[in-house]
Image 1 (cartoon, helix red, strand yellow):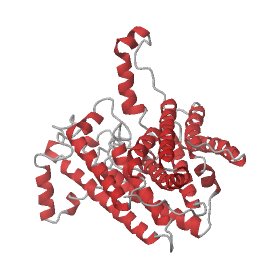
Image 2: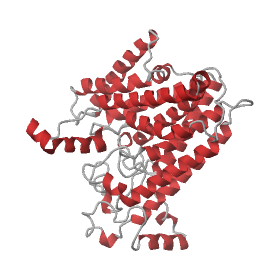
Image 3: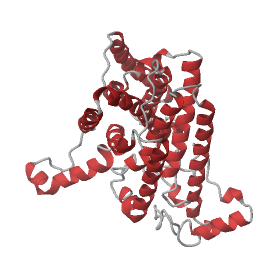
Length: 419
């Protein structure tokens, strides 16, 4: 079942460049996303995959790549018991950092011991578990712990584990999880069970590590690009299941108050029948979903259509939504992450083109993640959400420069923060 660790080779610059691009993308979408005039693709949406939604899967891809590489090396140096103990301790430390970074707000009003001890702590835990704690850092810790039993396994075992995790997510979503996620307060980033599908980009990262660090011959870039395209196409195919939940034109007003579908995973009623009929008659425009980065049907009265999208299509599991962590979203995003990594491998490891900003951000990603939120709050203190576009972008440049300046200074002094 176990495979040997990838052979030790010179530093993989493409991983730093890919990770640096991901951090830069995170800076962009996290800062601009809070402004009314930001491009709609730089905001997170519940109903389709925007540019902002592609960033988080990139982090997991990079984590899987580095995890497969570093754990194999540590195993050879420290032995099995020490290596596993070190990883568990490191991941629990990352989880602790997440609990500190993602500060829990006060849920009872007024903030008194009587209100808190009388049940207010349950309100705090409820909101924290759905909207605060389970963001990128804690998801990385949970997902890494989840795949730890198979991180040394062969390609087939890891592939089976990835597929099994995704199927388990579908089953649990059908049983209770989809409804729970959309019960107020709505969860974000897949919620506490999100690790089941965040396993997908993480495991694809381990496959990329193996493909790049082959013992003989050149990296299997053509194969990687082929499977990247297959995964993106497969994710789009999964997302077409969302068409089962289109609302007939004559029922839009009658069902306007209903947000989620009654059976969001396995369709009921005439939706599936209409979909089958469209296939039989070759009406592919009624079968295929909108491509990634294109919003679903919505009222033109909204700024981006997100608020009223449920009028025309009830929310369901097959949407490419980061909120749910659906398999359509993460299958597509995993393929996109693989394709973007291949681009950086060709650019930096084969052609020798390395972008300094990406190097600085990529080699100190953890401290960059922590710092960017602090700098964001400092800069946006002078920027209302309805700031003019020019002022918004000027603020972004200032925010990006300050954050980069901190990281560049750490790089000059060879200070790197890792867990």
